[in-house]
Length: 119
Image (cartoon, rainbow, N blue to C red; front, side, top):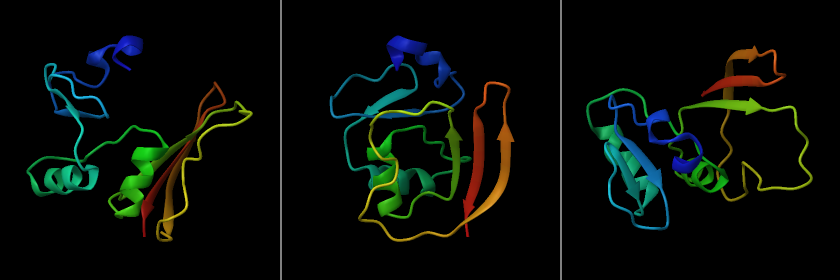
């Protein structure tokens, strides 16, 4: 991600950024490369002063958070490209969670964003 879009996309100096990784790396600006238990990190961040925790991640991160019921809202982007195969966003091994649709936005590119919150 750092190579593709640069660190300033997320780390604009206004907030702390945690990159969930298997490889330990030194901190860069306000970006921490985190290799510990994800549920512990989120519980710690939720207990601190501040605003929302935003997670932009793949299936492994999302499913770990779902397993511990640590996601309050979802913004799911539907991109108009059909893939031949890939990793499922939502895997088995988690409890069922009921969601309420907040908004649906469509863009000229064909992308649609669905915003849900946990009921």
